[in-house]
Length: 379
Image (tube, rainbow, N blue to C red; front, side, top):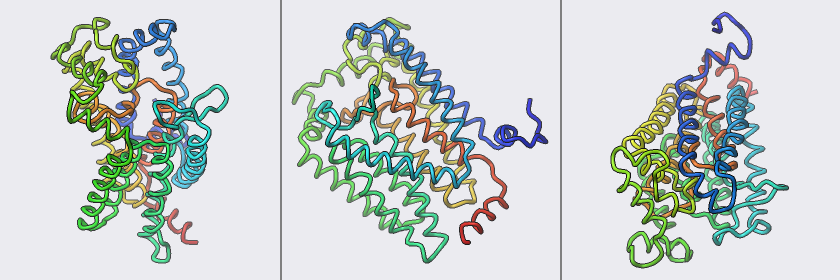
């Protein structure tokens, strides 16, 4: 056991980090492995891969994921901002490169090949965007000569235009909603918040009008008979069959029909085999992490930390809500993973970056340290 008197980097980290937040993330990763044991084998068998191919790969991905969360959680506020700036710049360049050079998958160019590894750059842009937007808002609030609000506003179109061109409507909406949450916390008047909401609705209407795949998904959601609803039918059927207590591990049927049973629809597989009770437990676990993050944001005296924690927490929570809403047919189908539970390398590593930022920002820092930092920035 570490002593509070121990003045090492590890000792300082242990006594300032929020261990409840770390425990919640660890519980999600563990649940993800359990659910992947159920949802992964049928997909692997269809693809001619070893039975536990996806589970074994997920374990390998979790090793750098955990290492990245812990490494980033040691960073100071200054190094967090620098890392976010570099990540954002590289991510935007790769997003643009993916549009021109990336492979077309399901009608979109969202991935780029780096050697033998496929990367979805937009996943890494999201947490970096939150940090930079929080930084701009905070600097604008601290210094009258700094056009922080203008910079924060300019960051939004710089981020979502490449996403729209890919096209990736889901990520565009997610980034926009997170940005609106940060704007609200930054103190924007309700009038402007309502205006942003209206602009968002206009954006949805424009996407429905000009993007055929968006129109098709919304139409199928509103009218089951209007097109192919194969995945949404089986995702909903899995909850009907599973009931409260599930059919038992390995006994599910829906996963043999769902092509994305190990990624986008893993929550449905959990519903069939483990029951609605377990799914409610997962929802509560996500809610705990989100509420813990918002509580820590409220306690923070630093504007930048408060805004960044709020944005990262909203990003994490909204992504989980969208995935679970699609699985329960409360939203049109959208390819978005369930954080730390769905299979995926890019998704896990990008989530590790975001949660590493979150753990670092929520560490307890003496007020004198923040004041000294502000004085250093002023000079």
